[in-house]
Image (tube, rainbow, N blue to C red; front, side, top):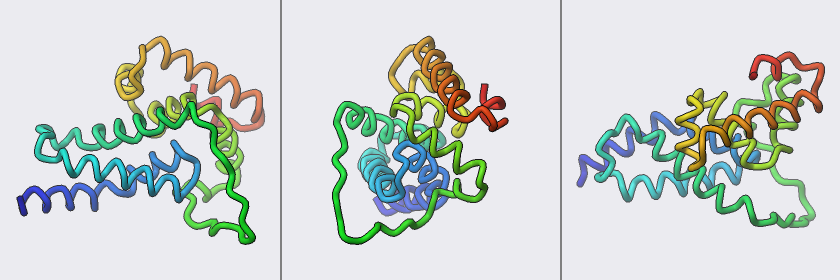
Amino acid sequence: MAGTEHSFSEFMAARWGPLFRTAYLLTGDRHEAEDLLQGALARTCVKWDGIRDKAAADAYVRRAMVNHMSRQWGKRRREVVTDQLPDAGHGGGLDVRADHLALWEEIRRLPPRMRATLVLRYVEDLTEEATARELGCSVGSVKSQTHHAIKRLRAALPMLELVEEMS
C-alpha cells in the first residue's frame, strides 16, 4: 500500500499545476477550482490501484472534474453576500496579459458546457473524439458547441485575434 500511496503522491505533485489550470478554467473561480480538483484527486486516490494505465491518470482526473461540473450545470448558483471582498488570489496563470483578461472574462460568461468544450479542445489540446468521450456526448455535439462558443466570442470580442486562432 505504501508504494501505491507514494506513486499517487508523485502523480499529484507532478500534475497539480496543469490539472488546477483545467479546474480553474472549468469553474472560473480559484476556490471552486481548488475544491473541484481536490475532490477529483480524492476520488482518483481511492481508485488508484484500479487505474491500470497510470499515464492515463490525467484523463481520469479530468473526467472526474467534468462529471462533477456537469452535475452542477443544471443547478443555479446563489451568491453569498459578505461584508468583505474575497481574496482575489491566484488567477490560474491567466491574468498575466490584458488581452487574455478580456478573452477569459468572455469565456467565463459562456454556458458551462461550451466552456468545458473549449477548455478540453484548446487548452488541454484534446481531439474532438477525446473531448466527446470526456464530456459523454457525440463528436457532432462537440463540433456544435465549439462552433457556437467561438461565434459568441467573436461577437463579443471582434478586436481579439486570439479568437480567430481558436477556430
